[in-house]
Image (cartoon, rainbow, N blue to C red; front, side, top):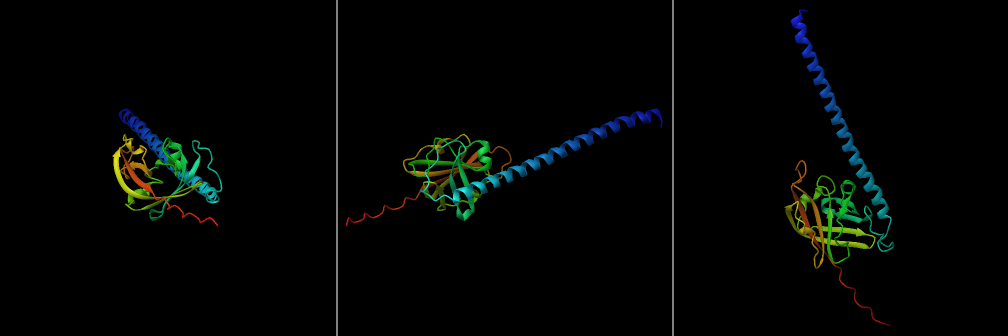
Length: 209
């Protein structure tokens, strides 16, 4: 091989080696990302199954509510028509929302006057909310009882809008998730579902014998 040819071959081999190294790097990065995504899904499924099993073994009213602490289980939310069913825990940190629906601190709890606000990821637990309808029934089971709500309205608001967390005079439930549902990255808006509690009629007074 002539000296000039060897000189040209050297840079080509170096470029090819760099290209292979970069390709292997991104391949490894992709594999790691897939492994992490799989871990997140499996971890959330395992957590939900374990906590739901424990929760279903407790009859409402038989066990007093535990102290409200970050990450403590509050109950289970369900929208039967959408096949949405998830454990609700106290707090709305990234770690909590990765495994469950989060109850936003400083908002009311089920059974209390005011606005019960829950947050969930649009690509996991609250993804079915894209098909929510007015009049849909929402059940929120806790150790203190089974609370029923009916959807009254939905809205799309800016991510900075905190008015959706404001307290109400009645007993309401607000579900919040990111919007648009198919957006890639940090979504700019929030999809909000407003529901009101269906209060059971007061029992008839019993006659005194």
